[in-house]
Amino acid sequence: MELSEYLRRIPKVSLHCHLEGSVQAATVVELARKHGEALPGGRTVENLYDYPDILEFLKVYTMVAGLMRDHDDFHRAAYETLQEAREHGVRYREMFWSPMAHMGAGVPYATAADGLVAGIRDAETDMGIQCRLIADIDRMQEPEAGLEMLDQVLEHRRPELIGLGLDYAEAGNPPEKHWKAFARAARAGLHRTAHSCEDAPARNVETCLDLLGCERIDHGYHVLEDDSLVRRCAGEGVLFTCAPVSTAWVYFGNDLANHPIKTMVKEGLKIMLDCDDPPMFGTNPSNDYAVAVEHMGLGPEEVRETVMNAIDGCWLDDTSKRRMRRDWGREIDALTVQLDASPG
Ligand SMILES: [Zn+2]
Image (cartoon, rainbow, N blue to C red; front, side, top):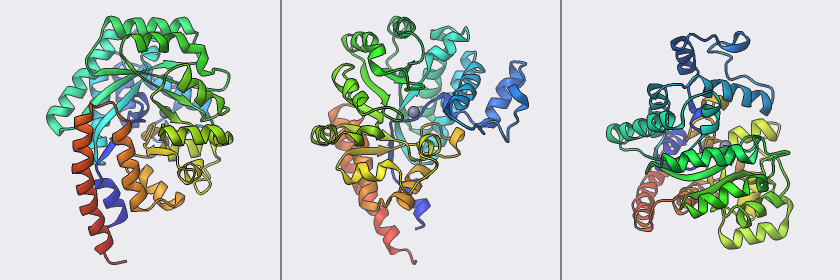
């Protein structure tokens, strides 16, 4: 079996993928047409996802989010990304979404949430893929705006919405800025995670763990700058949800061979791999594994380990996780035999 096919078929848990970053360019064009909008700056389906830096990327991300306006748009976005995920071996996803981007564009929270939930339920019925949602705070906005979003999440509580996250540009917006929302989310029984140390000092990881009560860290690469924190995270088994392709592009000069993920694995940190904003960075859920294998020295054993790490770090109940470890472990081992048996 070819390596790419092997990596596609490996069963996966996805813990670091953004709904709004998952909308295919062709769908964005159709949504723009549906709502009578032109794509800004004369962009087309071909160059929609070309940008020079993270701030330009965030502008496009916000534009895409702004084209999702009614129940059907949210349903479609959720369904389509889960369809792609399923084709690449994802069987369970905890997916980020950015309610503040939609609320800022005048879409009621409940309209967006109900559209997503309907899309998720249909995807599970049609394809057997399971998905839960994590509402992300836009850290660039004021703490009050984050709290208002959380009010909406709790007022329109849906069983599929299980966690609170934190994203957008980290520089200048440290995690402590939004500590109140995280404290309230904890009291309300939501799980917590945060984008951290993609582009900021190691101490942000500590703040996320100790002040925000995060159960895992999204990205976290700059943790490597603090040896004692690395030892602590390795010892406590903190899971880092890493995205090889998107972060290489945004922060590491596209240098895949020297990507910090390689060192994180060497240092004994627990990582899993995911695709972040797949079409926006020209990737997909199995391609990020392929990149890690090709450029970061991960072999089948490490691939298996990252899948197990993702199972451990997801927010399903312990019985489900035990079953997944056992069944998926067997499945991965059977696939690995076929990989080894193939010529060349
Ligand atoms: Zn992300």
